[in-house]
Amino acid sequence: MVAPTGTVRAISDIPRNESLPEHVAVIMDGNGRWATRRHLPRVTGHAKGVERVRELVTACAEKGIRFLTLFAFSSENWRRPRIEVRSLIELFISALDEELDKLHKNKIRFRVIGDFERFGRRAERRIKRAEATTCDNGGLTLTVAANYGGRWDIAQACAELAKQVQQGVLVPEAITPEKIASFLSLHDMPDPDLFIRTGGEQRISNFLLWQLAYTELYFTPVLWPDFDRAEFDLALASYVKRQRRFGLTGEQVEAARQA
Image (cartoon, rainbow, N blue to C red; front, side):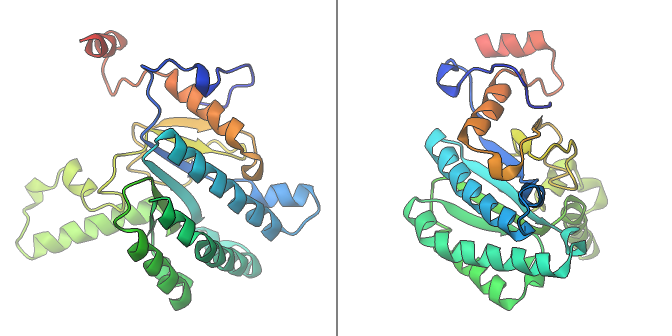
């Protein structure tokens, strides 16, 4: 769904029987364009985007959203200019160093999915340190997808299943959608309820291909550095107005809700 242009109820106006999403996934698009429109280096837009990440993490924690997954760097982003790629990696490391104590203090669990070893040993050490420090935290789980691709995720799950078949641990007939899902990067989390993409593009760009099968989609032209709390509230307000049927009829959903 494209972001509405008219008036949408504020979150404070949503009836209590309407649930906010448990898991929100976000493609944070538009940092470079935001900077270019201001005649600034693209890395300035990425730095401004980090501020919005802080704001979104805080908002999710305050609203009781349990999982937030952010697409920070796709496996296709290596095609960008080398200087921008280096700047993105350095920005990620510095932001993680700056925010780790705050994340831990606020009981936020941090994790990274994707083939992040390609970022180098320095980044890998920082990531593993942050994951180990926050692994027992019971608040919001903040997941960052770095050097991640949905096709890669499914392929590595299938490779693990193939190993089990080869070892005689598993028979091909036992490979079910549930079995495949158990080997995916987010196997220990519920699938996203709400997917948000900023920046005006209306595609999921190889992000969580398996997990987004029944996710509510929300697209907005707002560039990521301008996606503030008010814009997030618009996305949430759009979400709570929808009826999630998962193959049922609307009448069945209403009957189950009233039972």
